[in-house]
Image (cartoon, rainbow, N blue to C red; front, side, top):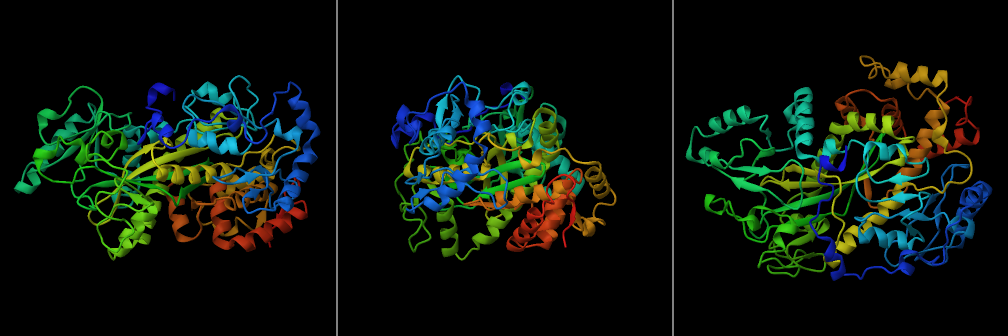
Length: 581
């Protein structure tokens, strides 16, 4: 799980491009409105004495916000006694000031790869960058080695899950999806191009190559794309059509090349979809409504003579920015104009658009972006499920608390000529560097929403509500409802008597769902779709079953009223089990 297992940084942009739009922050800006925040060796004592201050400050700040751009510094829970979570300021927004004894706790661990857009959000929100102190709340940087996860304190959050390389490495991602195809069928999990991991799969790949070479001339014009198993920025990627071009000994993956992509202005493009996972147990997955559409800078051709043209066949910014044809302006018309021609407006310019510009374009072409988006969200859910068992086990093994880790993934998706989405890869450190106003707007809004959704809490007051150990009764209920062969038949009775840990899990989730902002929750989900997703999981985890049943039976308002009533009666405390009805 160390850094050598994968390339940690994916970039459609380079670090240097940030300076083209916004200057590097000085210390005063990074430190936020509380520019004179100082370290204190007595911080831990201050936290113990300020438990009530945190709750009072959250309520007071909410009431005091007078301006639309002035927000409370903390977001209060729906349920009394639950510590508030920190708010974060977006572009042009400001936060009410915390009391001084709480402001000194706003420390962020610096990383050499922390993107500027993240620094801007935490700077606006009053955090002080700390390079030496280990008494910090948040970290956004490189993936940690296993021992690093063991050192994370209960109130700290880092932006990677242990074991997430199972999704971030192209070879391991494919092995996981291949396993899911064997278990659940290619119809459900056939959304990635057929892939071979060489040299191990060389014999199997040769058989597939030979089989594809028999038949019509069109069948013989096969195309394959070669990629290193752990790289980004388009490094080492080639499109080939001759057997002698295939590496036989060094590790590579070879995928079926999707040779009939959906084209706009004759050009190929892919989508960068931002996926945020707050927890793998229960599995909580969100996809942001904002994303990027990245175009190749040369119009597409299926001619074998063009296979070496990286500006035609690859959509990576790091590749296409070197093309003489690449522009952030608008070479071919407006994405928001009446024509079907694609390209420029403030929202969709040149060779990079926003996701919303693509949806507008598809509507003008008589297509249904809603259908495409639903298919993409289904692809995202299944991809995360393919890694759920491994990552959840790693979190239990290495982390003191499951909410100490969270992760933003960047999924690259290509639409074929039938507008069917295909998963190309998963990036565990998606680029957040910005080379255009569009990047700044899309990524800035997404990161602000992510920070609010993450649920950072100040280390003050009583223990977190989810930290109690389960009782014998609670353990017995979990065992009963997760028996491999009987869990589906027992779903109907799972909510009959909610245990204290059930109520705390539901309260935590309802609070989290309410902070989603521009993120759309795709897991957990109720109904038939949610039940099918549960069947795809390797084992029925109790918390996943609980949330599925609750969302199936209760809408948000009704669910909040139910849990609030139980909470007021103290049913969330040990020994407080109560019938949900």
